[in-house]
Image (cartoon, rainbow, N blue to C red; front, side):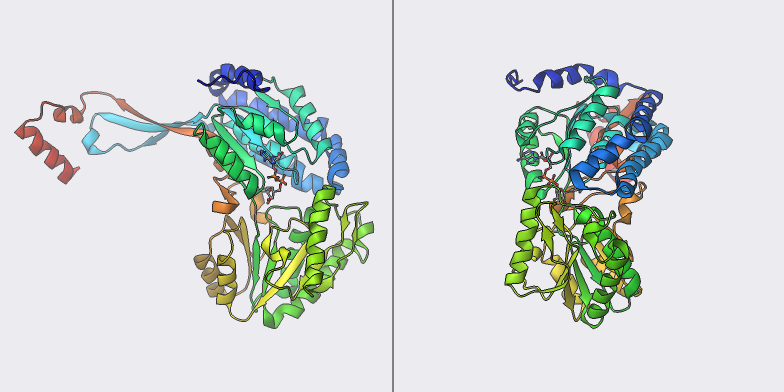
Length: 470
Ligand code: NAD
């Protein structure tokens, strides 16, 4: 095995490696106890500090922190605790007649030493959510959170150090360099949440050890609205989903494709809901967040400038303030295809509205881009909904709503190709951190033994009989 002695994280990795069999043999009771300790830390001990850290890092309103960070982690923990006994049970399967005398089952065994790399937009949820699945599956874990949200990362480091032994769960803070060094090590599984660009770097590093990966990535999630949709309700749900966390959500509606005949009605309804949610002055609203860093602010500002240069129509918003990293909720129409807003994942509070005359045009547009993490459909016409689902691909879809599929832990969450590989949440998260180990137990004489060498004419006949009848 390669010598990793110069790697700054090798000692930590080795401590977990030495411990991982013990952890993987832990009972469901022991794992649930660990999850309860994490639950208590999030729900009570550190709850106020979490709210405070997110206020500092993202200007995140308290209600949003409760709903999109604390609630999501607690829901994941409760779901895992409720179902863990069932998930950990050996799963019997039938055995073909040709193997008479044997029985078969599979178990979910822990993968071993895992790495979780998380992003900044929901720092607690997207770090502790996968951690819940990793613990439930019986793994040891090293976490590397994002450097972009330093208050949140420092608090997570404190929480992890407080409640876990580092030979079981440890958190490493640091910039990209820390990720790069960690990625050199031969982990048994890597769970990465972040951009498709970095996802490729992670996958390349993982390939050196043939380490399995779950990649929760991003991209441009389209929203299609047809002329039969309830436009007011569509606007209410889209404006909520788009401007939550100031648009810094992997599954927020990235752009709209609306039937031309209802486009102005839709934009008018969006204006109404924006006023309702954030008032006429969103900057003063305590329901509206801020952009995470100066770099991301500049990136979004450059999209706005580019749209202006291309003579797009600013239906709402467009104002910015660099000092407070504020970008007004903005809706833009009449955008040229080459605009940056239509090429890159926006990941901010800017909503481009495109229109179509025939549904096929909208479908063709979606299919001309990378496969999205989410695709939203607003329609009352069942045939249209089915047509869109059957002729596009996406990680997940909401019909007549946005975002909320994320919150159902009975559903797999994840992307497809450019928007991700593998699934998370509930059982699917547990599955991602488990190896399904196939086991066949021979009880008595096995019929297969009749076919062992030396091969005779009789055995040839028996083999043919097996092919024909079993
Ligand atoms: P990012 O890819 O820039 O960073 C994610 C993590 O990777 C961070 O911890 C960062 O330190 C690390 N990293 C950055 N560059 C690296 C490199 N060269 N080598 C190794 N590690 C590196 O993503 P981000 O800006 O933190 O988050 C935004 C992106 O994440 C968006 O594309 C968004 O759609 C996506 N996202 C996806 C989900 C999901 O569940 N699918 C959730 C949230 C965000």
